[in-house]
Image 1: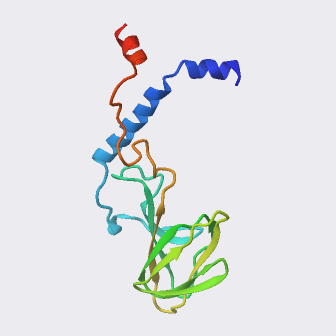
Image 2: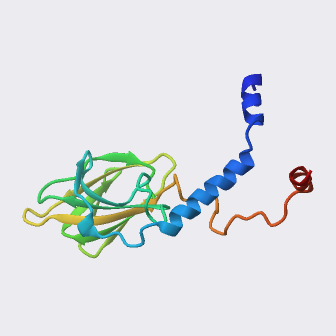
Image 3: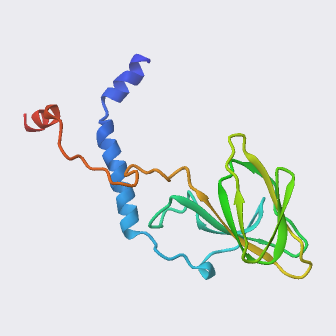
Length: 173
């Protein structure tokens, strides 16, 4: 470790910064949005097709941000983009019929079905297809937001129940 880096780290109170992160997360949760309404979300066209984002790592005004949730629409006879990612996603088919290719294997679905995309170390390759020539297919996709899912509170809360004697002495000294 360089002396310069060590000096910079020594000037900081990383424990205090940890507590600051916790307090920021708690503050965001207190005033966060509880209900996200479809009619208030824009339909975004991107490399994957048309999507409405309910929860996203960069949407910070929500009570919780531990999941990524979006609705995707696939026009009649069309398809989504093809993507390689870790997997571990659940998809609820809201409207339409079609199929999803997972690593080249076709999985047929229709309204009311739930599609489970496996979580694999090496990732999976996925693409969705709308087989109807008249009806738009819609689905809701949910997966962990690994950026935020653990948080400083780690699900059970995070509190200092007793200070170390050295800290108390320093504070009172």
